Length: 330
Image (tube, rainbow, N blue to C red):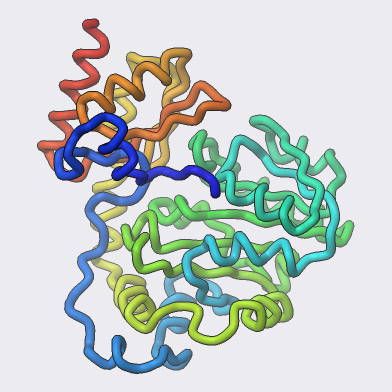
């Protein structure tokens, strides 16, 4: 089992600090998520049904009806490699570690391309290329035009481009989801999640966008009722709340810049609207320093990277600012 952010109970035990005292900035999840209302009793009492409006709401929000709801994008990450012929996959890394593990477990040969641009990934001549856009954890971005060109080039040689867009909701104009599985990009596969921008990680709702044949095989592998009734209802309502989405994008962009400026004196910083990643030789010690102040961040041991999410209120911002000020003055 791989390590992930959000392991707050482990940190509380390790540093002997009560759970309630922690500020968790380790996950990149929107700390002011979509406010889930009281849900109708029927969604708890009945088996989920596909004609409840979720697929329609998702098609409108994402601009593409060639989709399948899944129990968080993690479900698709684990099963997708089992549905494609075994071959070599080029992964632009570092990236979300569940991706390469799933491909390796399914018998594919994974080629890691460190901090590569898309042209280099295409030059690897593998049938599959996989990337996160924006990338987790580095916050690097691949321009939309280059992503679509890569999909076209892979299509010519019978390959597939797999794109994880878990963090792209704040900038929908950069997304390639609307074209995934369509005649314009039949070999493009895109994963989306409601866990990050909408802050609904616990609902376990995501989507895979791809051609209908691949979606059908994934549905068969998942079996019935792969997404819970309450999860489907909460996701449907969130996807339809355009006023909340617009206000949230504006807030996240402002908060992201605030976080970037706060971390900038400590090293090289790259940011998405939901997290900032610091590159510095001292990230390990900084991670420990913040943890001793009951602030949990995500350290990546294989690279000198520290990922920091957004505080959810002014009290959180003050705590983070104070802890970083103590670090700089030490």
